[in-house]
Length: 392
Image 1 (cartoon, rainbow, N blue to C red):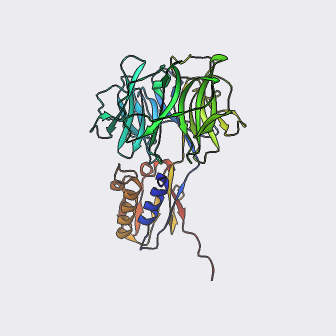
Image 2: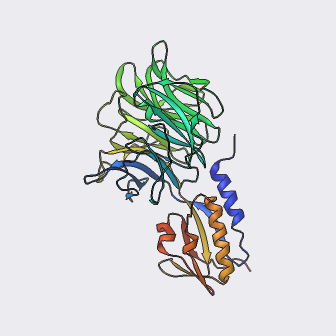
């Protein structure tokens, strides 16, 4: 199994942040948050929102975007999504201006293959679909699998990528009964070469997503005895019936970073596979306990879909002196330290975007000023007072 992307980021950043001017630095991952789509409290478009894992801290991050099916990049900062015209866009969790990728094949949903490549599904008729890849700069649009898959609409608006194993999970009809099954294959396969066998009691499967450690897979399944119910299940990636985590009308599960719980959409009635479930975001433990409704009692109640749980990365910078609002930091390193901070932040985003806006950082003598905009509302940086030396 490949090194986890977050472990690679951690090694990259902590190596970059060896400071020669007395600056003490470390990288942490903040408390998990949930990214999702919803229709706002007033008239308008479907947009991207963030909230804490208890439903608090609701924050809109796009406006008038018609954003659908969001997917987080390996950096847990950039977000790809599909708009109402089937175009792919990239924004960020702090709401940078969306940039169109330039796909020529209409997209129904999207996932990240790596830092610079997107996978997306496309369909011309709402039943037949294919899997494509494209660079984040719009280059290299080409087929991933040669197959033409067939599925209900719910199946062609959700798939998943497990980047550590470089495997892609889709659902598609399979003969002789033409129920939707979970199929998977590697990035380099010409077609999915494996089928996940669960239970003959499940009539259809949708929205499969593998746990962070690669040991379990969550999915929504329809029972042969009660069509249209679409319950949430978790089983081993080796297959089997697994355990049921929720009751009915569930869609688009997402694992917590530690694999102990999932977020998912729960609607109030069935779509029978003909469209994505839209309703409220719920969470549940992997054992099926602690079922919590997160959005019903918010202004977005009943309009939510596509939850994605993630941990925003943060760099902790320890400074000799910090002002109360955290925006003016006095160092002893002067201009040399400024260059170190710029290099360190480039290490974090690996050149993808100006994550902290190094051009907005000025050094005058021994004073480094960082604007509120650069701090990104503390999503990425925490500025703390220099800790007192310990020991003799």
